Image (tube, rainbow, N blue to C red; front, side):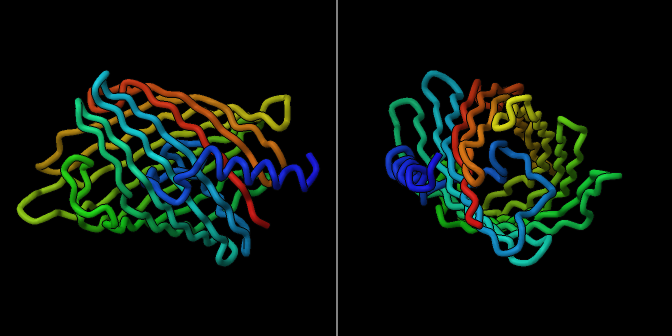
Length: 261
């Protein structure tokens, strides 16, 4: 694809498909995954834009849509900073509302870089949720900041790359309410196919509430693909289903990634 045609294509995609690009809900994920992060930060001085839409169906009368945009920057080698902004849509019975979600700041540090002899990378990530959505019972936002820490490991088993995440989120409590903290966990797999631009993905991810207020547990299984349209631009699509009563019946995740070098 010629550079001029690619720029026109990208502009059309941004304006036509994702009109709410700057409005989103934190998913703690690195595309094409729903929750999984890779242990490999982007290179120093590079920016990467990730944006997408997640459709969740909990029942015939309960649906959620999350439009997300996530900008990441390689501040120095092995250190990545990110800002995610969300817009939320929810339908519950006859009630149908939408609003901006809580913004998410993140910092990812790689502690161990994979080598050819031992292709294992290890990183840690800190998350800070800013309560930009305020307190809203319908959307489940608390109006308080949250902070989280995630351990990340990635290892290549050619042609498969595996990613394992495990973290803890400290949830801010609104007045007169005890909200449970959360454990989050994910396993993501990427398979490089014989057709080089195409890779297949699979993910098992979830979260569990902890402490006395604990009641909910979600677990989802999804699979899909990512297609590299150009060196710096890729599209992805995946579908999934819930494995617990608190999870969505099914979901669809579609989006793109663009690297500014």
